[in-house]
Amino acid sequence: MPFLHSHFKGKAQMPDGKIVEVPGAPGLIQLGPRIPVVIHVPDQFAAELTKQGKPVPPPISGFALIDTGAGSTCIDEEAAKTLGLPVINVVDMASASHGSHKANVYPTKLQMTGLPVGINTASAIGAPLAKQKLLALIGRDVLSRFILIYNGANGEFTLCI
Amino acid sequence: MLSLEKRTIMSVLEKELKFFEENKAKWLGIYVGKFVLVKGEEFIGVFDTAETAISEGAKKYGTESFLVRQVVPQDEKVQIPALTLGLLHAIPA
Image (cartoon, rainbow over all chains, first blue to last red; front, side, top):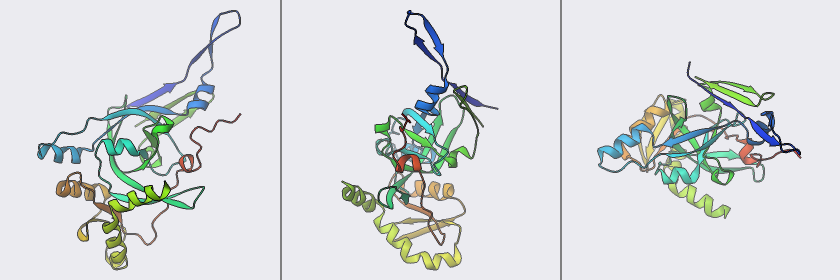
């Protein structure tokens, strides 16, 4: 069973200069369960570009936060534009400040670094994530294909196919 | 800023969304639960899954935008609390 395991570990310097290991839990609290990902032009669009003799934009790397509170996966809007992904739908996104707002939906191929499979997601919502130093939020639609084990006490989590 | 963002989003699939809304009542009677593919003011086809509709759209239009939407009575509002509530980096003091 392919899996991705992440364990936060930290080191701290004591007043006497000695370096000691600190528990991983605070790191996981601060950064959240994030994994390195690569976003590609989905296979069917890459094939069409190739057929037309056009270059396929290179994939974009970054970090994705696993968000069990999100119903849908989101990708950074600017990354979607850089990859030339077409808008295939517009959805209403619930908002705290003004009821709801419209958001573009893009077809996306998400590769989790370390896992051997790329996931073509039918709908990833465009959102301004880059300013949060994120490329994607992995929502429950993608998580429905995985087993997620979150061990907050040890500062580690595991994603299995 | 918000109005500019809204205008940009609406302009991409404006025709397709208008066409979808105009035909939704009729489609609910025959295609409920299925995914329709719309380009401009043209109905291209109906599919069992979003993936097959997207593949067909990619074959016909490459990376041009097109609409793929499920025919359901009530469109679901997407919930991404961490994003919409600004909680992505909220750390308790």
